[in-house]
Length: 125
Ligand SMILES: [Cu+2]
Image (cartoon, rainbow, N blue to C red; front, side, top):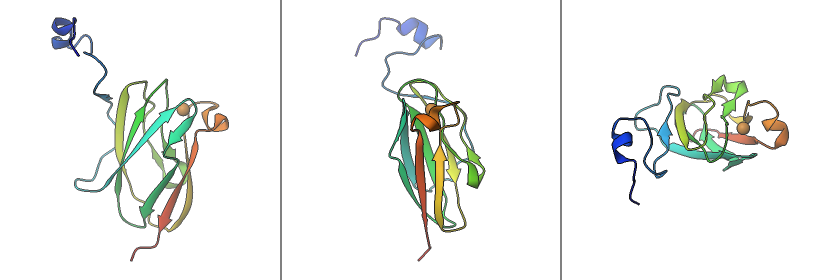
């Protein structure tokens, strides 16, 4: 796609198209850990079940496809920043105890509207 605002884009004033989400500083990531990509929208997560192995980090990559959202696992002390449409943020999530954990969007009323999911943490082999 051609971009008529290339000069402005080059100055960093405007994005050029919407092919690449813009990165927002998140949490530290673990080099080489598997990635789980989760997309937040009004008002759902896709996927809404994340599979981890106890003690093994995954890099959670969270994108917003519309409006302001984040992804938090309160019982793991994990919360990515709230991002806007077309943005992406990431951070490593490690949970040491096998079990089932809730994740949610912490923007007011979003969890109530359906932005909830489950982290399934399996026993290591
Ligand atoms: Cu939300």
